[in-house]
Image (cartoon, rainbow, N blue to C red; front, side, top):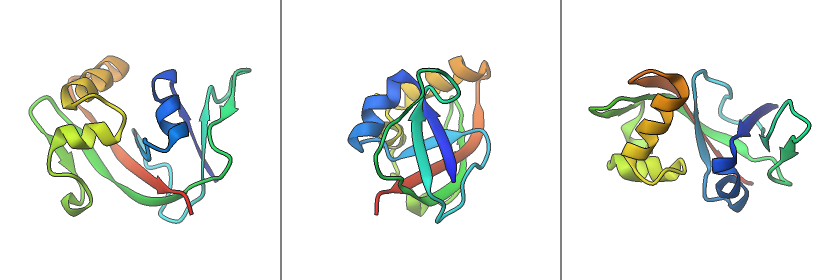
Amino acid sequence: MVAFSFSDRFVTLVESGLKTQTIRQTRRAKIGDAIQLYTGLRTKACRKLTTVDPICTYVGYVAIRPEYLTVGDTSKHPRDRDEFAALDGFKDYADMLAWFQDRYGQPSFIGYLHRWEFQ
């Protein structure tokens, strides 16, 4: 079982089912793994966001750079980078880039996209 914790910014989106993917520095899940979705993991405020655990349906490489977005399998993602950012809970690509730059203190971010579905 794999657990992901989400900041307050994304809680409502995860709970409502509008956010069904997350980008992390490391590959945390494999396709077919059950995923648990939390906020405040490892704190007194820890709370599970869904009653049913979704299943990981996709894991792939992603690079978020000021100039462009790179994804592992382009057939699995929207062609427009603003649409891609919206799927992850951001207003647009500029908002996504700014969030990753602020969080990690680097101009670019390389990691893994994890996508899930409820079955």
